[in-house]
Image (cartoon, rainbow, N blue to C red; front, side, top):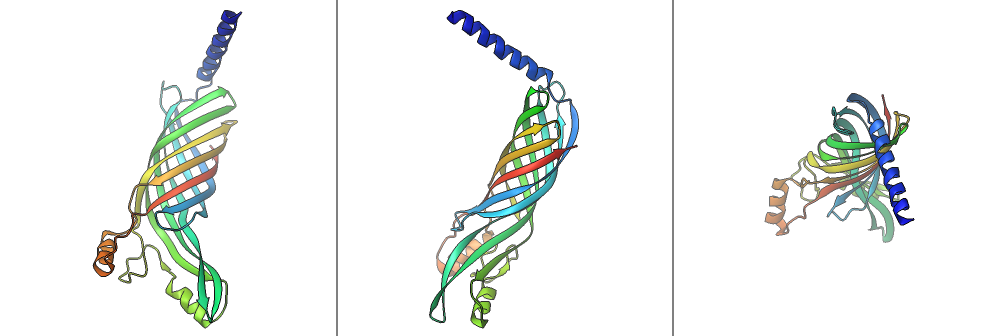
Length: 239
């Protein structure tokens, strides 16, 4: 009886693999539009996670006779950063507020992926590879839950462009360039509709070397290395 069960299981696995080969994606190029949500964080900065948006486009190339292996590259506009809650004393009263980095990047992911189709209308895939990004805008902004001239003055002192090099050591700004590695897993229905989950780990120290040197020179303190981290939930449509 056990031998019969093992034979039946082996036949079922073989049949599943045969169907997967039968439903391999066709070789060549396909294109996809994307939009979704980021949950990002500035690691080692003391800031908590922040929600943002992303949108972009991909081009995939399924390699010939590679059983579902493909190359993919794209161009994304993506929001990253972090935020933290603050408590400050104004006119003798404790006031609540937030400080956040809102960082906008143009990002180019380049990945190798593999796709598996258990049935013709449903495919699963995974991708891994580097990304390269440039900061195209962003701010460090303080917001206090109160009105008044003293509040506005304090908010102005802690609101500045996040990628602008500054001699003011109270304004910790970042370099524009970032690079890292990421992966993505996803599912596609009916050859068009995609749902994806991904993570990116930045490998670039976001502080400029000149800022680090000035900080050591003036405060005898070495700044920690800060890296981008991002988790994304993305919807896509394949053309």
